[in-house]
Image (tube, rainbow, N blue to C red; front, side):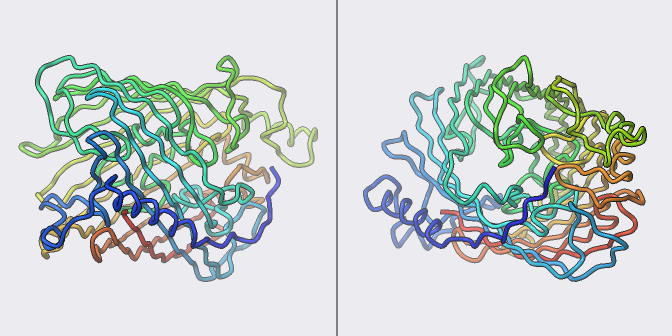
Length: 475
């Protein structure tokens, strides 16, 4: 895979101004209600620490939901020791990078059980070293392909239908992924269209939101979950879900990219497809505390190379350098499993843990190059110091590779995100901490720091420290 060299794109101001203008005009003309003077004096968030916004997320005639977000992340790193640097390495000299993601969320309720969701997004800027050189990369918002540009694109378009299986109703939080304020306690849900697989799979309340929580790929998501997605993290597919008070189960079938980390999807399901399966147990590990246990599995079929074959081609002198893409057109299988735990410890402290594993024989395809991972951490709500919308978090992740994958990289092979030209293998260990400060209404800022030992599994490079700063505008 060739490395594309391009100067980092400069974030455009007109995107955020346009987003504010759209939301503001909707407010002026009655599509979203602007709070009056008495309302602005009231707390915009209850004691549960939910986020607030610049404009209330209300509905036009009880039907149309409109909201927006603007998220900017600045990161840098000082020089660090590196015995050598390859084509896909994190650069050892001083770097800085800024990313931005602007999203306009809309939803329309046709009935109390059928809705449509359409989101338009604009992403700009690049990550450090063009988002190369770390399996657990430090910025989940970073655009990994600099040729995509910053033009707005359709991020999600979904039809969501709910079939009630009980008369009992439970409260729900209206938001970008569903506008319903209540749902049947026992129900079937169907979603069809374009979405992010991790919008619904492998989520938890501590490490899933890069705009308010952690930023690292291996901490906010299961690094070994090679979920079906294009370069921007979206795919087309269908999800079927059953939920009850005690447990739930969801299944998805979705399109895979035509090449590793590619933008174009393979629509021929006989050649490629990605299936995800998740069982959710609404039960705490600790007595008299809230908690959830989620068990994940996935199967990917696509035109993926096999690491052992690529290494053998090089060792037998058939190629001058190991190349995972040097194989005939075929369909191979990649599969994996995950465990996701979320546990309330006190009213203000919640812990989480993840474990992920995949077979590691076939090429990393859609997310990142991690074959085995475990992560854990906690988040503290700021109620204790009278700031219920503030958050403090700390987490650790440790990532590993299969024997075949590490041999391929040690011989000089490149993946789509890492490849130093050689490797002295060690686990990639990451520590991250952040503090999110609620400034006013929908404005949040957060200092963040990450410490990475053996970046890209290489003991000959690093460690590296990555301080950062985040600005979030909830419109």
